[in-house]
Length: 163
View 1 (cartoon, one colour):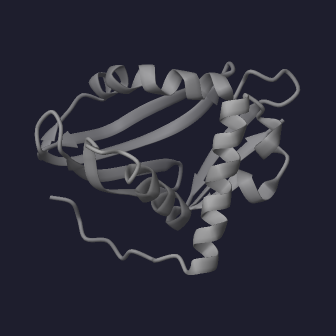
View 2 (cartoon, helix red, strand yellow):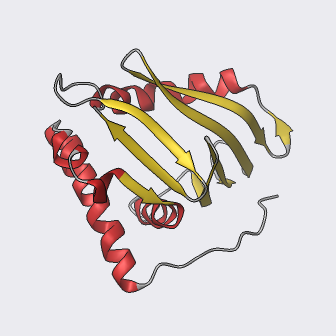
């Protein structure tokens, strides 16, 4: 079962800021121009609350989203994702992962994964999501002058560090 969390709601100004960050990142990704976000600290740091707001807004874009009630929790060097899967089978999902930057690639290490309360091998989750994440990984390293150096997850904050 998905644990109850103390959800912090963003106020109207914070929602606008989160939406601006999302728009900037989408624009940079579509234009394949990392400099549009990497040179602005306002875009390279996001709070847990902003990420959750952005995630919820993005899920609204799907007619039949494969998951609902998704939340992100940031902790020391790890990201925790929780939600309720609707496809292919209904059930609670829990994933703990860390993201590392090595050799101009993003590596996703899944330390714990559960589906409907049962453990799932991290390697299986990795194979399922790799194809979706490879283009994103490539985006962070396609500019010779501007590359992702590190992703730092701390209590309630994620920061993208660029060269």
